[in-house]
Image (tube, rainbow, N blue to C red; front, side):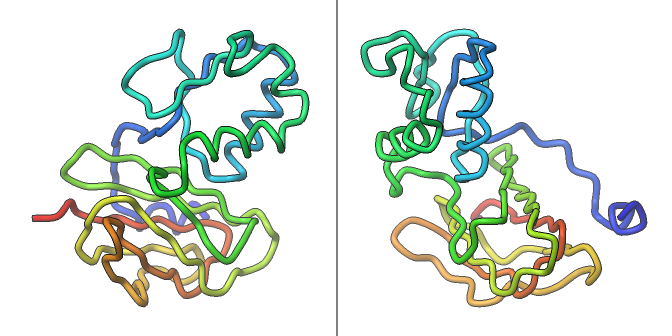
Length: 176
């Protein structure tokens, strides 16, 4: 893995998030945050709700009562429904064992894909909100590979990573 990571161009971009979450430090909230990650709902821990995010979550408010995170799966679904699939910056299709982390600065984005399933996953379909030209993909165990079936559909860029081992990186420049 270290040899592979040495081949990936350096990139230090800020995190992209759709949801601001005020973390109360509880074990319940920790598990709820885990489910947000596993559902590929991009969030950032914030000290207080912020208009910067499409959705803000703070337990103990009318929208998210103190016990709202006791069922982490229901909590993640509520956040997803409030955000809506159309407004999600990242969506991953065809697998529930791939986690995405998106970074970007307006001139480019980098998508980190982590496959925690223990074996390669075929045909990981990704949708990013926004329009991006073709980019570069680096997959552990394969090196640089080409994206497949890239296209722009209803305000989003969709593509397929043909085969994903434990980790991959997709670099996309912003639209020109």
